[in-house]
Image (cartoon, rainbow, N blue to C red):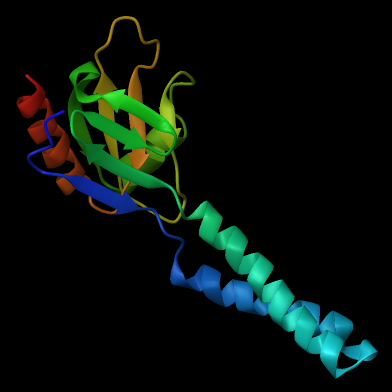
Length: 154
């Protein structure tokens, strides 16, 4: 397997505000346990914060990678030879493709806190998926990496 000329690896991490919310969840648990004493209060603070942080981290652990001749987006692995042109979507276009323009057969890797996206056409005639919608913070770099990987695979 030939490595991609322009490798790409992005982790769709949760925004900073979610970490503050995780701490506030811990504070809420601490306040609930306040009547039971100091030790339960501290346990509620630590436990509530930890559980909320684990949930935020797991939601933000998805990755988009271009490795060799494949695009790996979350749990999907697609050979770049089955992909067509990539279209960079600004926030307004991305919102439209997430809502009223969306095709129910499409593969959508959505993260609401990422306003931009990349729409990649699927050209494989045996695949019923018309396109991939990938939330990404760097759609230009991802499009370049896909183009380079397609060129290297051809």
